[in-house]
Image 1 (cartoon, one colour):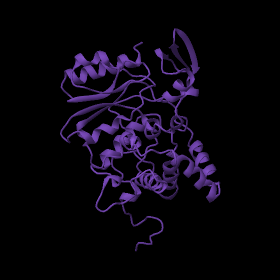
Image 2 (cartoon, one colour):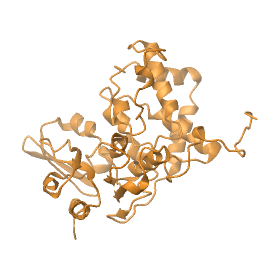
Image 3 (tube, helix red, strand yellow):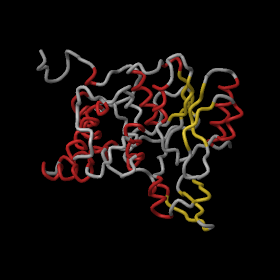
Image 4 (tube, one colour):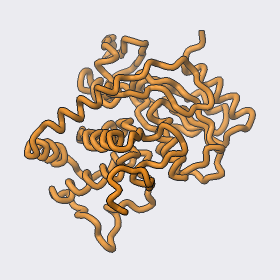
Length: 317
């Protein structure tokens, strides 16, 4: 039976040889086995560098807005990535007819920081199967329970399967339990106002305003971000508490009904800030009020970007 990377390589070879795509976005090997990187394959000779495993951290939908609308793009997508692609199609960032999506049901992204915190970066080998992750550190093999290494966003994942793939490389996985996200949001809501603010202040105070979260997010594609706009100045641009708070709150509201909970922002953050609580809460409100889940199809506008006469609380009339 062909392994997953071989199946992906065969499909990419077919697409490139038959000139069905101009570029295929996937991942490639790097010197460290812990850090496969996004790669842009334009011919089959480059496929020797292909990599695909649980350490592939990036949401590849992030690169769609960087290409012209005419570019025919192939891309490997997991559940959250496919929903991000749908959200970008809705926002007219790339036409669906110029995309070829190779779907892989996702059993969860491994949190690189959990491995590094356990053994350090001097890892010379990485292997994984359904339940076990094995690394070689200074000549010694160390094994982990795979689930214990998953990123927090993956532990809460409800939609592990791509929703819009042109071809699927493996059988679908069971969907996650939505009550996990509900319990997470409700436990946060049960805190007092002062407790919620203290949690937010504690997380935000570590922010160094590097904007790695923005650069990793597929839905942050504005040509000029509000924090970079100088005339007029929309928010404090320093690392003062006011500036940090404004950045995280405004960014969260910009993601309402658009965020697919991929966790790319948290994985990119050098300060390990946990801000998906905000977007999870806002997306929870989107579902409670509008029965809307971001990115489930390529046509439906998020509630904040549309108007319907049947919307609840028609105060605007």
